[in-house]
Image (cartoon, rainbow, N blue to C red; front, side):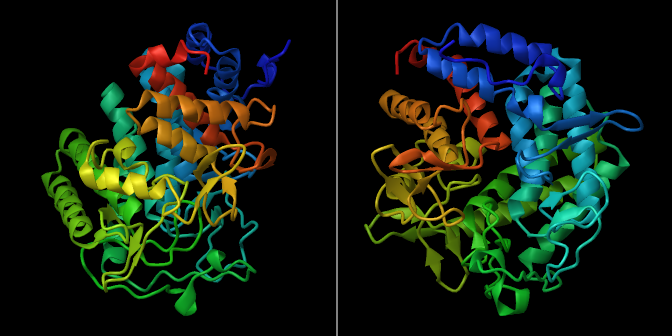
Length: 443
């Protein structure tokens, strides 16, 4: 066969969903290009096939590794199963999967709300010598706003799709309170969180004895690290603050309906409003091109960084995350700036074009950003161009990768990366639902 199935044998798959398998079979037959159909069939189930460890011995528990790293990121795990949410009402197994991950993430946050990645069992691992408060069970303790945002998004998304309240008990509420307390601490620049690592990479550690660069209180929340796990240059990371404002508003609905706690729900809405107004005040800046855009990072003193990174949340992903519409004028200005030479991490070569980032380095394009470009576009030709690049840069593996060299897709990083495979699956599902005529084309 020209396109042999790249999934594990059935008996070796870690988690099986008949609903997902049926969807793959149904949707694949509607995709005109056989290579795109093959990629979809491999990528959408990759998280279920290879990264999910589910148990219901005591309480439903789902641990989702990121792929080739045997640890669970709050961000990655939530994003990896997110495309399955649209099927959850029709599949009790998927419902159990979601409840188990919500339960596990609540436990992780109660262990350490500042940590971004965790182990399945309580032991110290690779980064045990980091100069911060490491606890058994924590893989890495990089404070990233988006880690807690993804917990809120996952929780609200599942509840909204199912109206199932069974996983929202006392422990989940305690995790929410820990989340809110952490956010407020970093909004007020509480210096109790410090982080340093002995590393040749400056982006792996924080300056100023582990506290990071100063900021002026303005309503935004400090983030020590980006979704890439790279240190922020300036402490107020705008994509993550934008994501936070959205998820706080959403979670207030859950608190109102499930817990009838008007004080916490109202507090979430007020905090979201404060952050959103601060974004308007601090992040909407005049770009050197003369257009008003969203800065990537600011510090409250007038400092700003104009760029975008491939990892999500990103400026490119703001409509996808619900912060603004695709047609928002400031977003459109921002999009034009970051999808071209005004973004220092936009690369274009013989293999394709797209956004990368400092995590891998110059000239490496991230498929994740190409997928996000398609998900946030209303231009059919732009979406088709993204599909063409994705189709021709998987280096024959049948899966997406973390990054590939702009001139040679055979030079890629991370052959097993669950998040980007799920995101590609989500792109095809979205096109099938919203723009099926694009899947009819040869690409």
